[in-house]
Amino acid sequence: MQDQTPRLEIKHLRRSFNGRAVVDDVSLRIMPGQVTCLLGPSGCGKSTTLRMIAGVEMQDSGEIWVDGRLICDTVFRIPPERREIGLMFQDFALFPHLSVADNVAFGLKGMSRADKRARVTELLERVDLLRFIDGYPHQLSGGEQQRVALARALAPRPRIMLMDEPFSGLDNRLRDGIRDETLNILKDEDTAVLLVTHEPDEAMRMADEIALMRDGKIVQQGAPYNVYTRPVDRAAVAFFSDAN
Ligand code: ADP
Ligand code: MG
Image (tube, rainbow, N blue to C red):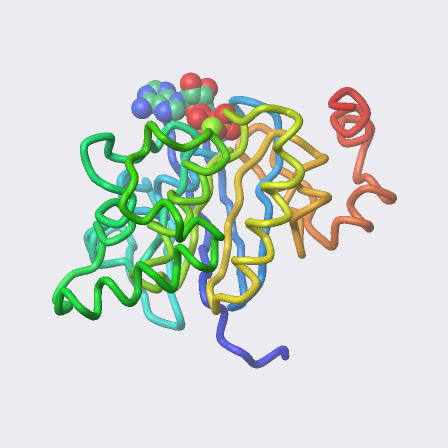
């Protein structure tokens, strides 16, 4: 496994705002099929890290590699729409005026109508919402809308999925179920997942690996059980216990 090429590798990413380092030398590698959670308190720099990988925020220094290919450093930059990255955010809503089918098909370019319909059908089956294919977002519950958003993000077969607190808008009662369903669906795809969350529960439940972030730095990284049972310092203990 050691010599496999990571799907996503970021090296020494840095970003400052107003002279303050918000992302301070962050490095990560994620293999295909792996879910890594970037876990840390609000304001520690998680979303900024994700936005640099997505290409909507520019780093001050550092490199981003996908499948062994440089996609961004300080002089060279592949634009966001060509990075083959799927995005899911808490408030990344569906298009209300488009049908469920058209929402899922949104990112599919250069395909015949029939091929698009086939891919949309396959994905809606996967998220168990085929019955809504010709429905509209307002006819769906929050959890169902989130599953359509997942189908939409997966439709173009992204190499990487970036998810920024995708479940925080959902009702508590539904959240665990939707986390599990989402994980099952993601596990069938050959995609590397970077999931940002401030909730230890969510990271413990979903991650293959946790990268614990604080003040712009990754302070600990490893399997969830190890990070939880062998916290790196008092602040890590406090973070895990305060959140519960
Ligand atoms: P997190 O997602 O972990 O809550 P963010 O990456 O959103 O953290 O933000 C980290 C810090 O960077 C915060 O203090 C935030 O206010 C600041 N920040 C983020 N984006 C900008 C920006 N465009 N301009 C100035 N400050 C920003
Ligand atoms: Mg954030």
